[in-house]
Image 1 (spheres, rainbow, N blue to C red):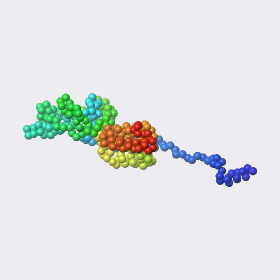
Image 2: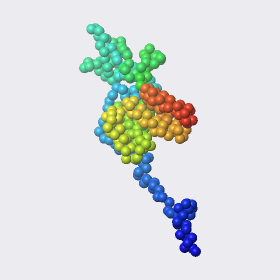
Image 3: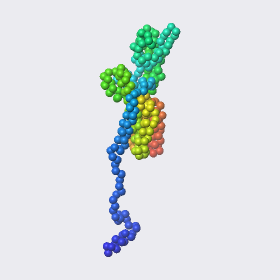
Image 4: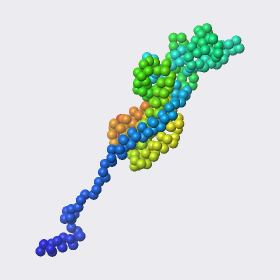
Length: 310
């Protein structure tokens, strides 16, 4: 009787699933080892690129970087975010008045001698033989003037890059025990380190963003191709231009954008990152507006409410 019952059960193709013999659940993917987790891989990419960018032990001295480098140094020494000709003569063009007519001059410090003559630029200025012409291209006059009538200038490219460097420069300020502007080597090496730090960080965010769409190995290749195969190595990482901070905040914004619709915090972080990118390079407002337009469309078509926190 029991044998016939088993045969009847096995021969019934329509037997309910609950009547089938139990089997082991399908195997699940084991969690990745600690060294394969995305955060750890991103940190490794950051450290490798940071070392590569600084292995030459040199920095790139560039005019575009001057207001970015001197802004945090000025703030830490009790100054402001503006530049004047008397405080920063090397950021301005001057006219040396000679009997043959004015001659354009550039110099680094007031106590610097005029060519090979036994007279300094300060002495020429006090004698009325040195006149201010205009600021260099990386400065733009503000609406304010000094008590002497000289223009008070600001960074043409915005304050974002210099403000981003402020935490690192604060440590350097403590290390040198005084005004960083009096220690040009520390000042410019600090600018180089901040630039390389931000570019390496942008590559880490590139990996994390790519990891959203693909596996770790291709994402690593994408991040390394960006970090080692583009101008971020040869240019952005070599001094504190606007490039490095801007690339860092754009990459951060892209990463949080991929998560903006899942959490209002990520949407707000995306907005904050792109706002910082605009402060570093005003033309990045195009990216910020494009992301805002995308989130507006998503709000209308899919009722995704990431626009307001963004």
